[in-house]
Image 1: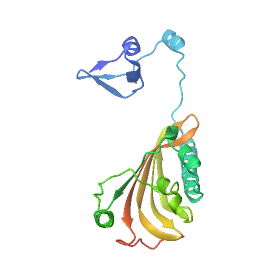
Image 2: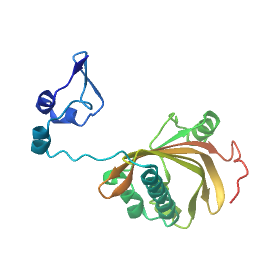
Image 3: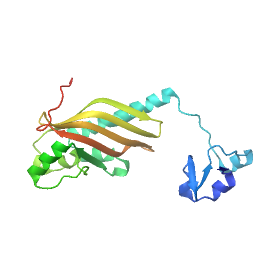
Image 4: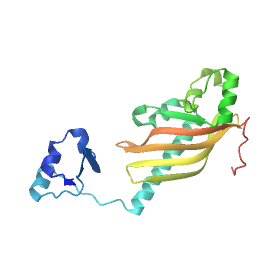
Length: 206
């Protein structure tokens, strides 16, 4: 196993330098994280050494991620697509749904179209549709769990989606988030769904 020196590291293409884990180049594994750096190299590169995140720091970031969830639900309830879009990284809404088999089959029967195992579909489309301007939308969430190292995070929770206060579909939702300069942003959202007509939702505390 060859250890990557600082000189070799600096000669690599820029998109490789960001990988502080294992690089595999032409079948040779090279570790860069543990490479010795001289005082002269440190001064030239202006390396800023930071301690590993503490438990308190991680707890703060977990709360910050959960605040994104609160803003997300508020934007849906308020039908505010501008605020909703701002919660996604660079405003790019990457929102996907995956229906359980029975629910997909019902959707296919009603629409006459094939429903794929995963599709780009979500409440962001409904809140922009003028046909639904007189309807109220709400997403309720249950048991959110955050896993983060302070830079990337996953958020997983159960949910149900309600129209005029009545559950329409429910399931599990998972987000991938990154900590951008402006704060935590959603990189991608994926949820499963049961249609309430097919599989009634479990009783939940409000």
